[in-house]
Amino acid sequence: MQLIGKLIQMLPLQTGQGKSGQWKKQDIVVETEGQYPKKVCISIWGDKINPGQLVVGNKLKIDFDIESREYNSRWYTDVKAWKVEPVGGGSSSGDAGLPVYDDEPIQSNSGDDLPF
Image (tube, rainbow, N blue to C red):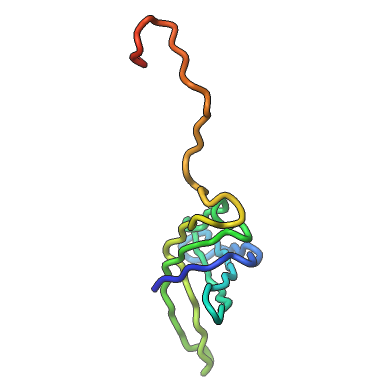
């Protein structure tokens, strides 16, 4: 599944130690667009956490899975992101993760126009 929404809140980063090593989880709250916007809490795990993209006000495209599980006769549902991408038009730079180039032209001391 996929949604596009504006990041409105970042919850504290959670870390811990499990059987297979250290883990980290970042929960974020995004607000969808449309006539009736919804707020959705989404979990991002491990190396999929990119602090450069996770800036409050940024518009994000999030691919996710929904999973429910039972514990002590109660059901819990998780929304887990497996891909997060910035969408242009966020309040901060929508180019998070893209390379930045200087506007300075390359100076060549040789007489030809070839850069090598």
